[in-house]
Image (cartoon, rainbow, N blue to C red; front, top):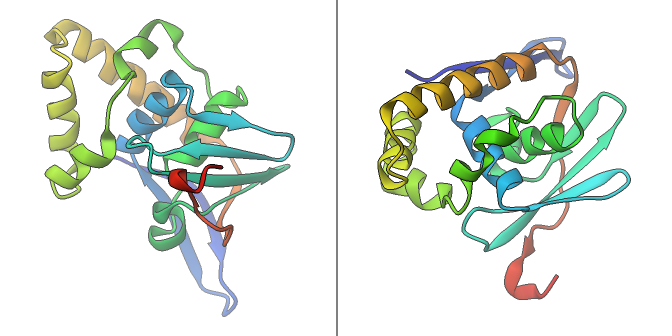
Length: 172
């Protein structure tokens, strides 16, 4: 089952409405970014390194507006995991530190590619690869749901930005 977070409803230039939504799986990916220390916070922006360590996304934030140049935010028009990770780091959404270790060293890019972006299959594979006991899986799923709901309650504007993607081989 795929859950969707409705983070904002906006009007476009023609007065129509566009919904910005995020799959629950993006919370798992955001937790991994935090667990791995892949979120580099600055005064008004952050750099979030991908789970395969090939690129960094730029997340810019000002008051209640967040923009990111990750593919989900730009092309799917929902808050991608970099924005969720920044919200976690800023304390806008609580981090349950006791479960962070389960999220270390998870290559979500590889899992999502392997399972053709079937996020539920990728999450199932994550639990299997990490050999996480069923009781602990249920606790983690509960925490992800709670984090998801907390993120859903935030009121902010999400936008894509056109900052140049930073490729890790660029040495930045």
